[in-house]
Image 1 (cartoon, helix red, strand yellow):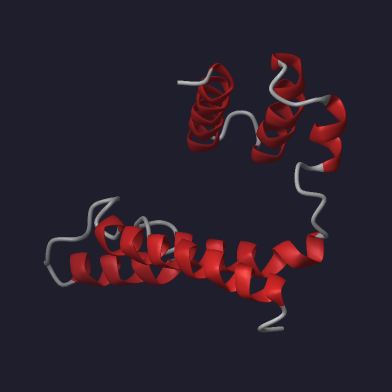
Image 2: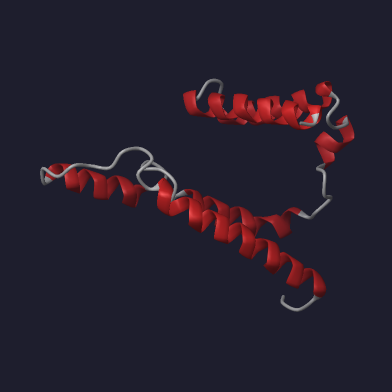
Length: 130
C-alpha cells in the first residue's frame, strides 16, 4: 500500500473517531486535518488551502447536498424520521432498531448514487446535460 494513502487513511480514521466522540468540536477537527496534511508531505500548503481540483464551490453544492441526504439512510440517528419510527416501535412494545439497522439499505443506495454522480458529471462535462 502506498505510504501517502496509509497516512491519509489513518488521519481519516482519527478524524472519524474525533467526530464520533465530539472532541474537539467538529469544525476544529476539520481544521486540524487540513492543517496536518501538509506536515505529512502528502500535499503542499498551497494545495491544502486552495483545494486539489480547483473546482468552483458552486459546482460541489448539489453533490454535497445529495451526500448529506443519502447519509441519512445509514444510521438510526442520521435523520429524525428514523428516530421517530424507532420511538413509536418502542412505545408500542415492539423491538426498536439498532444503530446500524438502516445500513444494509443505505449502503446500496450510497453506491448507486456514487455511480450515478460519476456518470452525471461525465455527461455534464461533455455538455450533454446542464
